[in-house]
Length: 482
Ligand SMILES: [Fe+2]
Ligand SMILES: [Fe+2]
Image (tube, rainbow, N blue to C red; front, side, top):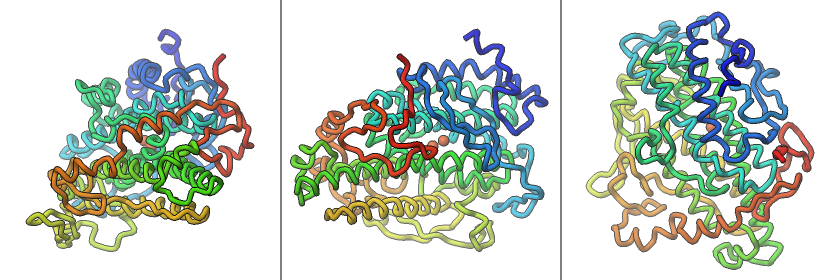
């Protein structure tokens, strides 16, 4: 660890927050950095710390400077503190403080609530790195290997972003929270990460792509609503994080798309017409579409839980306090205070799923979740187009929001993917048709073989249409250590 004590932070941490002149924060970050590197080396990508990876790093936030590509060893990645540019005269776009100048300091009365929001967001960032740490060993190509590492280093940067906010604006308890963020571990029963989906395993690449499609998209929605925050530094941080988040969802959507394409093409070539003929399809060395649907059911339902309860006073309080807004708040045409409006919420009423009007203020989570669902559906539509184009008869569908839930209105019932309430016995009988079974997992695992020859891909996934940074198909995205 001695090699990092003398790091020149003024140049080593790319930043646009004038760190050199902010001695106190600089010292706090210096104090935190060794623990972060320790965490990265023990919990980051397992077995690839010495590999040279073709990564992009942000060196500034303007369109030209924020994506520079080069080979770098991951522990030397330039994790920086980058906020979207200060907007002169920005006003608070919602809540009780609507229309007032955005806060540049933490409003005392909301300190605890704000800290909690930052910590919950911050906790998800290292969690996904921990979940994905074994994937390099089964990467279907160097291209894909580079992508998971890119996502990992950026999640690491997102942790830095939240730690900066904690250390700059929350004093001693902020520093303690920053320490805790390095202590919790995904899936550890004694010190788990804070949210359910971030304690699940990511055992294979299909899971990884589903995760980046569905769970990073929850991240996008949370960042979008924090980007509206009346607390300006948080808003600026989240606005920049969203530019990185877009790449994570690209990795997920195209990863699934390429898997779907490969499956459909293999079926066509072999003359297999029925997508449900699982043995035949699997015999081709590709993942059958019904198994992909089951994975989708799992990851979508886990991600819905991240939105919290449909009706929530916490969410109402955060909105009222002008700390956490709605998706695209400034484009919504209403009073931005939600004093008298209602919002339709799906609820369980006398054993039936019904739409009930609730005060819009308490239905903030539900609304964000609806926006999320619409965003997911657009991705499914694109996958379905790939299936259509190849000429296979199959459609992906999002399961009903009551399906497989642990949080909110439907946590105590069992429902089918189409939203029909079923008894426990039916659930037990059917669940292997609705969610990935052990057999499905074993089969997918059997396909997970590392492919490291430049330009080559595993049997189950098609090559991408274009390379990263427009590199040719046989580009060596990762130079493995000898
Ligand atoms: Fe993130
Ligand atoms: Fe992400």
